[in-house]
Image (cartoon, rainbow over all chains, first blue to last red; front, side, top):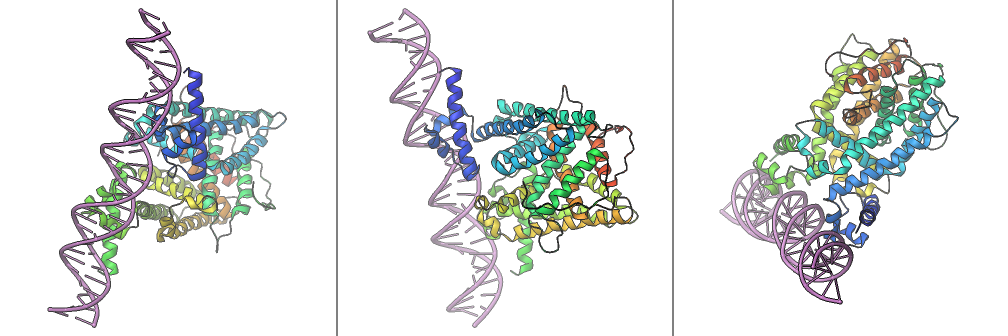
Length: 233
Length: 233
DNA sequence: GTAATTTTCTGACTCGCGTTTAATATATTT
DNA sequence: AAATATATTAAACGCGAGTCAGAAAATTAC
């Protein structure tokens, strides 16, 4: 069995687990389910993946690769200025999170993992097999790739005049990304703010977009934000 | 045993589990550890809490209450304009996340839970005992409280002229909160961006602060962001 | 072409741990 | 003090992640 065949088998298991994780979630998916769906024995899954978390890391890698595609798809479009690219990225980022919830959850989980990793005291809380896994390092790289692509968009924007020139591109992009991460996370609770709340899913989005763009452009028209029609995304 | 005594016993178990969760993390903490630390039998913990997740929800409630205190401590200070309050909130929010990592992790976990809750298809993935728990509803309320306090800060800022008046206070505050959530989450990976990265923990923070304030004030001085001395927070 | 050796694969087994339960002690009511 | 309700325990259950001894298949050696 060459490298080729081994990778194909790994892919089979990976795809089975992705299907199951999407369907029932990580915890409800049993290793035996994964084995059955992959039409192999339970023991064999442990031949290809160190343990369940290692498998999840492989899923996370797949997830992050797909997210990276979202970034790449936008930067390769010609005839869009930098700011518009970032607005488009913002929309597609939210679409991605909505339509690939399990994947996005995995990405966020990874970010949390890195938090632990950076803290010498908490590093030991991470499954050592995960740390030893090839995926962990790769994931850091893909994350960095996304950062680089996004930063390019800001650079574009500064060059074409759609973004104010005094901004440091990398820090600016990561701040935008931060807004996207946080907005997506807060959507849930905001969806609940009934009664005395003046905000809801329909009204927040346009305000959010305006603030994001104002921050980058720095040219304010003192006009009211107009609510959008229909549902979001 | 009156309500009083029961609550005291619950508190004992809660405090034991908080200590253990901080020390070893949720998964590494066994229900028997909680029982031993509380000096009761394992079975009895299930008399006071429905299951481990229910206990974790109680911990989350405590966590969110503490976060709410961070919000309240700032709004009650006199002689600060709205913008300065929000800058201070931002600093203290990050401090809170750093110094109470387990608590903050619990809060983020809750936000993820609400995401599932809002999705009819994924609602069933949530432990039904958690949904039935008194804590779940209470957590939504505390979240809302935080939103209200933060919104008040924006309202202050608009009144005292430190924040541009055309902004919708609630949407604006939630956007700020989104920035905080996302910044904190991205800190981990950014801490890794070595080699060709021009950003690191020291350089991002001041840029982030500038962008946040620019967004709110809308008065740009076209000056370079100056790096801060020393470590962050 | 077959024996020796390595690699792939299986399914029964172990073991830890969350949760349940039957039995007991303690408190409360009548 | 008997009857009832509440608090508490220890043992047992059940599930599922991970292991392991050995079978099957492929590869190499002669």
